[in-house]
Amino acid sequence: MSDETALPGTGAAQGFGQLAERAVHRLYERSPESRQFISSSYQACLEDMEHHARALAVALETGEQRLLDDYATWAKALLAHRGLPDSCLVGALLALQETVAESQDPAADRAVAMLQAALARLAEADPTIPPSIDPSDDLAPMAARYLELLLAGDRPEAMRLVLDAASEGIAIRDLYDRVLRAVQHEVGRLWQSGRVSVAMEHYITGVNQVLMARLYPVVADRPSAGPKFVGACVGGERHELGIRMVCDLLQLEGWDAVCLGADTPVDAIVAALAEHKPAVLGLSATLGFNVPQTRRFIEAVRAAAGETRVHVIVGGRPFDVVPDLWRRVGADGYAPSASAAAEWARSLVGGGQVA
Ligand code: B12
Image (cartoon, rainbow, N blue to C red):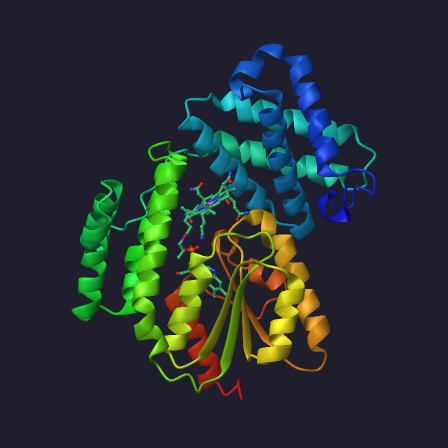
């Protein structure tokens, strides 16, 4: 087991994989009947427990209770919509807590306290997931129609709707943030509530990517004599639409934006910085699991840059959940959306901070 998977402060030998395995055994010993609720197979149960242990490790490493609370609340909603009782998640987290408490790890007390706090929070958490298309938004009817067409499998009509809106003058910024993004988030909600399949989620994401590519000529048409921006998802992060939108909107603002896309190894980012010498690097992480990775990437980038200053901005779901998290990973800024990122970048240039 690599150091990356070890619970921080737990000593080299104990990784979360081993911890999870012991927690699953404890759970099974205590209540063999729980197997039927937890999952149909030992392997799936172990995988779930590994996720719980990993979420704990992230909370410990970042010192951020809210990341663990968010994970537990998300898991509660996921299970609730699959008809599984709360006791299933609570039982698993208690087994993990007991396993951690028995370990000789110096961080054990802190980990137990974090799990206790998450369990308390979980008891109150509402598993309802609010809709992602805001009905008060002027573009909500269009987003809802677009989604409806996609769910019906009518890709040509769905694409026509958005492309017509673009040619009628609705700004790409608004189509991105208020239609495509809203629809992506809504699809995530429908998947989490068991109402659409993984296949449908993939299909809709694919159509959105094709649409972005169809809109790209408008983006690429803009002269890009401005400062350079390099955007990437950190290693292991496959959610790439967010950083692509950020890069596109910056390009529209006159920046010269280079998008490296999903799951970019740190060495590739360092090499891209040497090649492009950007004023700003944007790093995206959607999964809470990738927050420690983001911090490591920023450290590596800063170490490689030496005296040369590169501004680092971050974004993605965990940074929305914990609004001051960007400081903890060593970034210079954060933005909750592509248009907010463009605004942040504009203020950087306007403030004369970028040559
Ligand atoms: C599509 C999708 C996928 C696709 C991604 C395909 C692709 N090519 O990108 C695939 C199938 C790969 C995928 C896989 C997984 N997914 Co997924 N996925 C989604 C979904 C439905 C949409 C994501 C998306 O496209 N959003 C649209 C973009 C435009 O919005 P955005 O990411 O919020 O980005 C905006 C801002 O955050 C900000 N921003 C983002 N990055 C940056 C960077 C900078 C520098 C700045 C300034 C701003 C910024 O600006 C962006 C534009 O406005 C979400 C639902 C959701 N609520 O996000 C789930 C979701 C993120 N996925 C989830 C999960 C669990 C997974 C998996 C673990 C599932 C599994 N069991 O395999 C894997 C993990 C894969 C991995 N290692 O990354 C969960 C995460 C839950 C959690 N608590 O973290 C979600 C929330 C679904 C859910 N409701 O449960 N997924």
